[in-house]
Image (cartoon, rainbow, N blue to C red; front, side, top):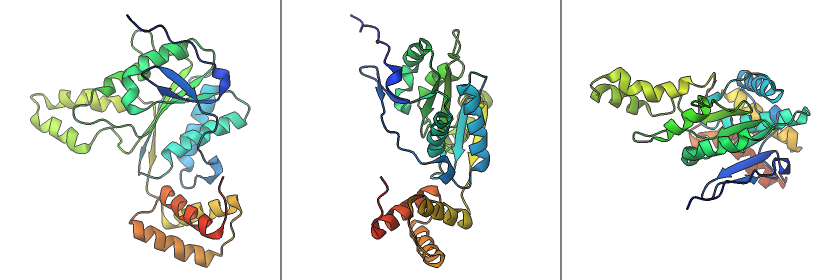
Length: 265
């Protein structure tokens, strides 16, 4: 009646995989969508700490699970993928496995699969957050704490979120105001973020950093444009969107490259 055990995939087929369920499987990713680490401007501290943490883990030494939280569009997920590429470029083997938030209940099955391998894996969950009645956070504890068996020694977990405590602030306040024991009502959910040993905050960029990002993209792709024109167009572009971030910088550069006939592939 129960499905047969999942066969161990060929981990030599790729350096990146995506976890799918129904049925359970690890799909290899031949080409990861990412940017070079040198193109990520304004996140130097987070870059250095995450790179060193990942390097330790890839070399077989102790390392912490990491939560990258903060301003949207500031390169949290891009940094995880860029750090993975950097580790590979240094000649150290490391696999990255992307897990969707809605598939967290299946995480124990994935861990059992990875536990059998000699490779080292970074599990990556992008845009992680939980709503009022969401129970997925309980499944995540299997990755962070590991229960009786413990987290596999060859697995590390990285997550990105716009929220420091992985849930809306109004949810925390509502729990406090409506519960018989306010501290206990909030403690279980808020404490989940405490299980990440490494917290890396991302903050909105300055205008100079925003312009530096775009100039870096232009130099990397060989697109020539004078500083005065770039500054005027880029500032107008950010004004129409009401925000300034790495994502907005890339969107402007994509538009500029298209107008100038420069391919990004």
